[in-house]
Image (cartoon, rainbow, N blue to C red; front, top):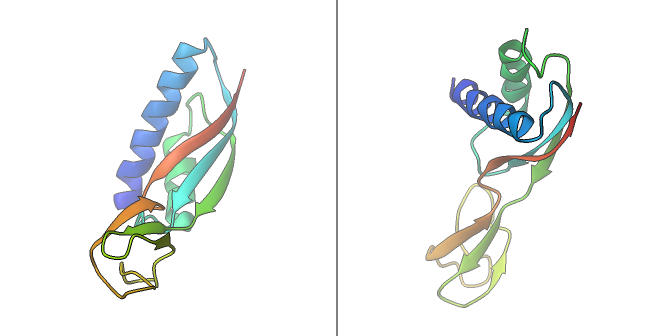
Length: 113
C-alpha cells in the first residue's frame, strides 16, 4: 500500500506541472526509482495505471529509471555504493554514513500537450 500513497503524490505533482504549463494531457512520464526507496516497480506501475484512469494522465507512457544508491562515509571521507542491504562503508565498514542518492522516487521528465 506504500506505493499507492507514493503514486497519489506523483499524480498530484504531475497535475501541478500540467497546470503550470497550461497542458491538458500527459503523454509520457519518466520516473526515477531509487534502490533504497522501498518502492516496488511492479506495484508502482499497477497503482499508476489504476489511479490515472479517467484523468489527464490516463494511458500515458511510463518509463521507470532505476537509480542506484550512493553513500558518503563520515568516518573515512569516501563515497560509493553501499553493500546492499546494509548502509555501511565498503572501505572502512563504518555505519556512520549519509545517503547521497537512491532513496527517492521523483518525476524526471514529462511530455505534455
